[in-house]
Image 1: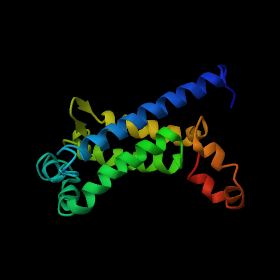
Image 2 (image 1 turned 60 degrees about the vertical axis):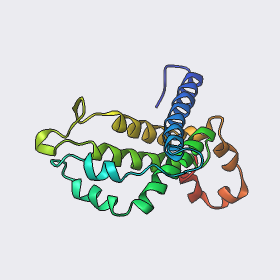
Image 3 (image 1 turned 135 degrees about the horizontal axis):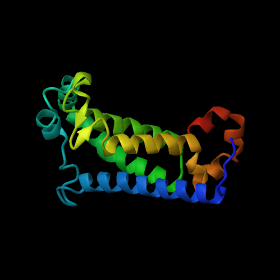
Image 4 (image 1 turned 90 degrees about the vertical axis):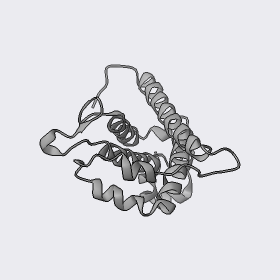
Length: 175
């Protein structure tokens, strides 16, 4: 495939998207971590949302109610997952793995926002089918596919190491 525009601009745009997505995850995770104040980490809980905010018409409602029963596991996974994904995106380290985990998290947030099922057009707040979680998910898939972690990122150096050269499967986590 050939591009008619500067590859430099392509790199700048990927770096910009990477930094913005890192900010989205870091901010969300840090807000949750310190919601109760510095002395009360993890005061945030997903239980209220999972039990009360998922629409009854959402075809996955029972799954989210099941998650609410395991908040002691889910809550730290969400908080520290968002923080670690944000840091990995920011520094371009294990980028593809982080982008995949972020996209999976966004897909769960997206499905939780459904106000109904397929016959209703998967409505979400302010429209049908598309919301910010879906957009973030698609951006993360694109950045991972493009290997955006190599652009001013740690993954560029990691891919040069003998360990990665001897275990090429590791490249699926990097980039």
